Length: 242
Image (cartoon, rainbow, N blue to C red; front, top):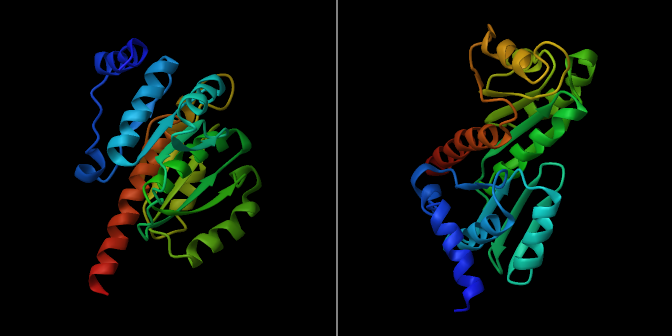
């Protein structure tokens, strides 16, 4: 093994202990948060995770980091990048994406909320879920919500992720109209007082709609993972009864 490769392994072992069995233990795979890490650290963590688990997910991946991942791993591993969601998924060659039978929906209030919604979508797909996504359905034009909700309700989803910035009212509205758990995701869109997502977070936390659970600001990964955990448990229970 060359000195260059030894450096890369040392980088990973020095900064992270990868939890390659997390998916089997908790139902949610470990994701590599690229933000705040060097390209070398992200690349090596993805390589080791993919070799151990077959698939690896990185979130908050910059364009420059994505280029480094593709250059270093693209020949050995399948590479999938979502530029909007800032995610990268790598898989061992020949590894087929899992299909759990779980089904969720993701709604995003505005265009600025789409990156967080896409992070949730990629996370859910890595966990084997089918995702119905509808974007730009915020309450400023609430008539735009009617058709997406009809689609969601007719497709028997088990949970809904609702992403909203500004005043963050959409998750409460949705929860009042559906009979499944809703995961609210406040985003750091807006301006002035509370414009970094605090206003949306507070609105969601103060919701009078029981059954709405709230994750942290911009936490698409956490929302997608939680919704998928619910949906996968529902799918498992249905298959065991069949």
